Length: 231
Ligand code: CA
Image 1 (cartoon, rainbow, N blue to C red):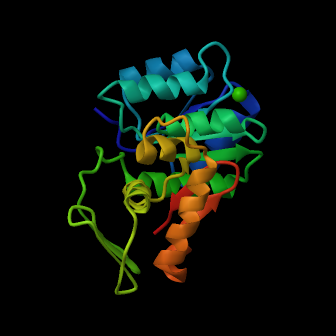
Image 2 (tube, helix red, strand yellow):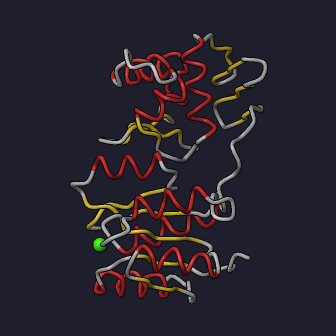
Image 3 (tube, rainbow, N blue to C red):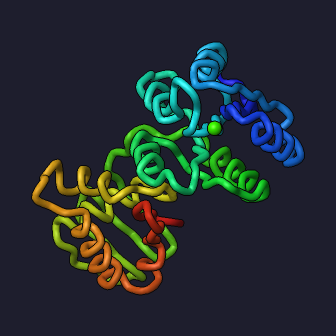
């Protein structure tokens, strides 16, 4: 059973944990639980899965990355919303966390307003949906039928190469989530070691220009991390 509104904060630095709890309470989240280690987090989730986990990556003994991996590996918690807290310097860790399936990340130092806004967005989105089966996507500017391999931007049919199409599909299926270049490479190109992450940038560039300004702008570059399709 998921507790409808409980937010679990996993942070070993008591000052930061206290600030987060206070900010969440001020934003109207009355049920906030704080734990100071990864194993305490796993225990708390096993006892009663919360609505959301705010997970610091830098934890003693069991790291936040491990907590994320373990939660995603179990069917009961595979789709539990997770927001990671990361240090500005820990880029590779952050990418690893996103690739492990965190829903969003916040870089320290962060504003408490930003934190409250991210929490609101992730809770509104609810649990991650199961791997989406290809369907028709209809957005404000983009319509894509992933079964029929048909893409329209601003009502105009767009001809894409196979790779561009797969790239768009991957971005749209994971919309509003950051995908690292490595993840995109794995998903779109397979595990081909000959391909460099730079290829992703080149294909994103082509995709943007083919789709036009409105849809192109929806494919955001997230500096140091990768790409995100926003709607
Ligand atoms: Ca910490």
